[in-house]
Image 1 (cartoon, rainbow, N blue to C red):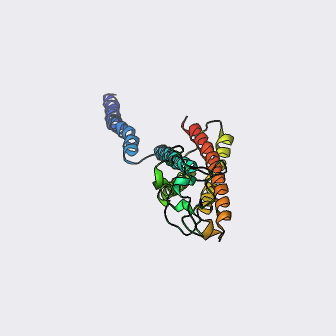
Image 2: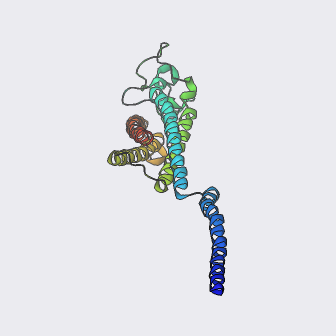
Image 3: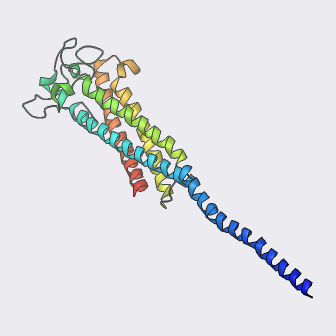
Length: 251
């Protein structure tokens, strides 16, 4: 009996000693298991963090594109006032800014690019009224030369590049559900087509002699004023659609 009692007590002590290390090991490993996900998240960006970065980049490009488009529009409005359109002959077409005979010199708007004083063709007989101190060209003769049109063109190219970059980043960034997906898609396509046609109309309107081989001064003048008006209309349509799209994305 005594031997059996001692044997039973020894088994109980052995069992107790066997359970103590296991519980201690469990206590030590629990914090490690809890810390490992935190360490992983600190070292490696999660999918949600990467998506958030793409979304921020996409919206930043949207704002940059809108700013570039706005700057392009400002110079376009200035040139729309200065140069001939279907709404009028423009401030540069006034008598003191270039009514001259073909083959003369001076402002480029004094004659057709095929015949004389300039690219946009306000040769003798094109000016409809004298400049009596009113309707002065914005930026003066500087605006009636290639310089301001080149600035407008460079800004236009910048806008096209930024818009393209925005669309490329948008392909990989998450698409937040605004509940207006149809509106966003429609505005996006209108702005894309509007921007592309605006660029084409601007290039053709600025270089009809080189791109369409138009040599007659009067034909060139009429074509340019028409294309310039079309260019302005397309620009307004595309810019309005793009601003609507950005407003939905941001707000």
